[in-house]
Image (cartoon, rainbow, N blue to C red; front, side, top):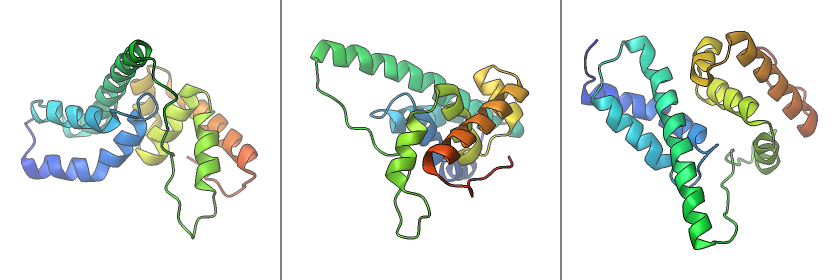
Length: 166
């Protein structure tokens, strides 16, 4: 175990930053990038085994995002602001076989645990055991939520090509 070099930290940000921000957006739109940045700052001061860094980042981002969401909720209540605009889960491309807006809408309507598992697995590349540790569930439950979430998305979006095997 040793502290990460600036180069190693930069590679982690480049490789995992966007997925971590997407993961944080499940709880907080406005401060997702700030939560991810804070997690990387915290990581810079830690000594972790190499194989525990990415799951640790997901846990810190999850906890930070939940905390930020609570803060945002209190702020919104106090300010009595109007409805907030939620950014989409997917970026639209002319070559897409999937309607990004519709897919984002359907993903956001999944139960939170299924959404967390799908994002951590598909965008984050976490194993089912890492997801289980992150969400404090069994790896078989993580897999079951993954399969259920994908099945729901396939059904709602009317697609059969969505990744069936983990």
